Amino acid sequence: MASAPSLRGLQAFEAAARSGSFVAASEELAVSAAAISQLIRALEDQVGRKLFHRINRRAVLTEAGVEIFPRLAAAFNELRNVSRELSGGEQRSSLIVSVAPSVAMGWLSSRLPGFVGIHGPVDISLRGEDDPVPFDRDLIDIRLSYGPSHYSEHVTEELVKDAVYPVCSPGFLAKYGPMASPASLHSVPLIHTDWGPSGASFPSWRNWFESADVTAGRHIQHGMTANSSMAALDLARGGLGVALAQGLFCARQVEDGELVVAVSHVLELGNPYCITIPHRSTQRSVVTAFKTWFAAECVRCVKSPALAADA
Image 1 (cartoon, rainbow, N blue to C red):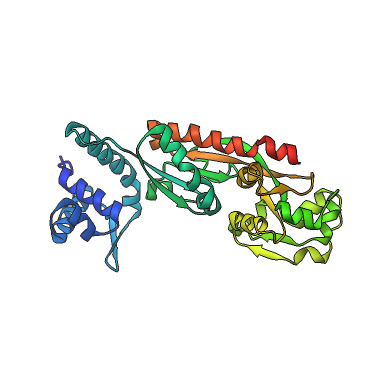
Image 2 (cartoon, rainbow, N blue to C red; image 1 turned 180 degrees about the horizontal axis):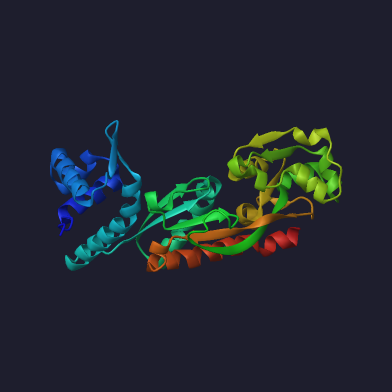
């Protein structure tokens, strides 16, 4: 009967997989890098599978390593939590949150103090990245995506469907307005957004004009272009044109009077925002608390009365 893998070997594997380096793992466990290498080699011999590729001083997980790492990481994380509790150390929850870059920059980052104020101290790793994301490799706890089709293997919940609004600064509207109809925007500077890899899913100014039954001429291609929603809003707030913005991003600035909805015609997005949580994180109380708070923030912005009042 084959002997069970040693706990020390499993610990060395988990530390090296999490840090991506045998040297970092050795520093964390207070042993030499050679000892880490020996422990992992013995573990590989016991399980009969190679767990790492050694590439330019980096420890890169093999397919077998990727398969077992999430479960070991969760187990050792729980052991660390129990150890802190028994030693009387401060209990701090940890959370890895993945969102699109525009959501991370300026939107969620400015709202996180609200969650911490409600929940208490929590170590949050905020990642701004495009779909698809590696849930298990990076131990992501919660992901906000546009559209429900990215992660069928995980628990995904549809939140709310947003729309895009033509917004500008009050000063810009005073200079170029009043804008009584969508056709009024033919003669004013427009701000375009390069939506990135998911751009085919988000509407352009041409889509907006067509949805209003207005012929979009060549002139709509002119104007400033930003590579993120938040940057486009900064340009609009500076009085440089009208931007096409999701309610999620522009609600607070419309509520504060920094922006106004220039014309009442809005275009609903084709897909809802969705929250995805991997099975390993569904029972964690901090994940549940963050999901409840995060979903409420998203819905509050998308359904902001200020958008409806201006539109």
